[in-house]
Length: 238
Length: 126
Image (cartoon, rainbow over all chains, first blue to last red; front, side, top):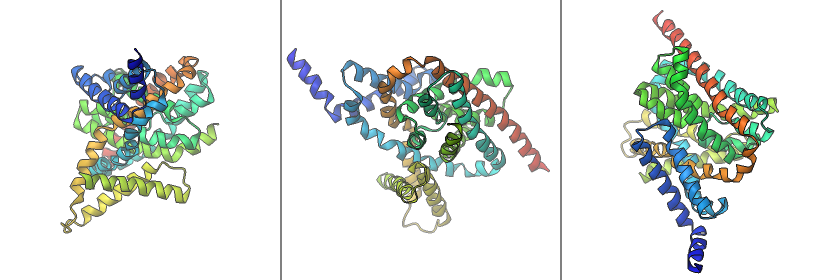
């Protein structure tokens, strides 16, 4: 009994253990996602975070313990965000051919989605803290976390909202597109990438390559646009 | 692979440094994206320079990093443990942010974008 609790104590303080938990949770989540035929509910980010969270709670550990190992992956988030430049560059011809719709849509919708998120939260009685953390919910994770300190939002609360936003966008796509009678793959993809970032883009690639390409463009450009305008809009709304 | 990683890391670092020096309220990663797009553009302009064939390497490493972005986001998401108490009292607004506003944004974007695309093809055909 004593040995067991000292082992748990040892593991809780071990960076290697928490790194293994993070990577293992992710790999298992990817596997579960493929078992469930890439269902949008079985989002690898959602399941991976949930699995890691279960380990943290069942080990009686706290977030500081977890981050000893989690930090290895945490530092990679902005770096993988910079790597989005590759897909932006690769699809430059698509971007050029549809420059007008893309630019207009990004400018209008990046502003609208911030205002919409804040006002929905406010109307439903959410605290100012929650309203500010909702600002970045449609931006890609790496950028959203970078914006948080500039607008007085909490990065981890924003993170949770971002994950669920992506999942909601992916699963509400079909009913909404049927309701609005939108059949174009470009429009479906673009809307998924803009509103649902990574999870939305994964869903778009299931529709078609072209939907995925437009989702990817919307994801990067909306992330950048949100970073630029969020501080301004937040200063106007609060 | 490591060379590609180095270039991407350096772009992120350069982005962070620029943000620090200019005091612009932007995440370093956003500036890093701009720098990396510039590098890829410049590289493509000089195909003759075969000594430094980094473009393919950057793209390969970049694709791998983007494909596994979910992994890098898990630590931030686990941080929700810090906010369980706060969220308990705010279930309704949280549900509202997630479902209502996401559905509105998704629908309006698709509507706007499909209209604009039709306008765009009409302009092109004229």
